Length: 202
Image 1 (cartoon, rainbow, N blue to C red):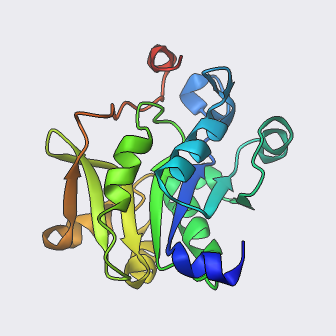
Image 2: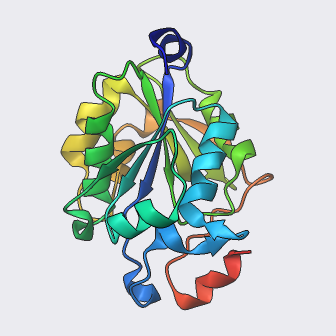
């Protein structure tokens, strides 16, 4: 990507795909099959179709196998050695990887939500107004993913991210400044955490 393209694409996609699928018998979520290919490939395409020219992917569990089996061409792939600590550590690693790239905001999505497509991600991306941007998809008024984090918020998010909370604590503390973008009409925010949840895959 050229510097000119970077300047024209201030919002980077940040895909958190490090989970080990503990409640799925230890199957890495990134490699679950959705529509005939690894779930991580589907999630990357969602971010690109939504308008993110730059996509960073955070891997953790079975990272080498994910690299071998999934086509992540053109993505910046970073590994979180502490992935077992939870989503918070992956979010910190992902945001740190964006430093110096020219990105002014990150559109953060989770690999285990296949029901959230480009229509929803694009709506949240459209809420970008600059480095102070703070927006979130909402499903029947309940905040969910993806989340748009302007660069001015990255340090605060990283400082508060821990365990499986991700940006939750930071967003709760800044609730009055969040633009909620209703996406319940175009997406399903189902997580794939257990064997029963595999029904959400196609």
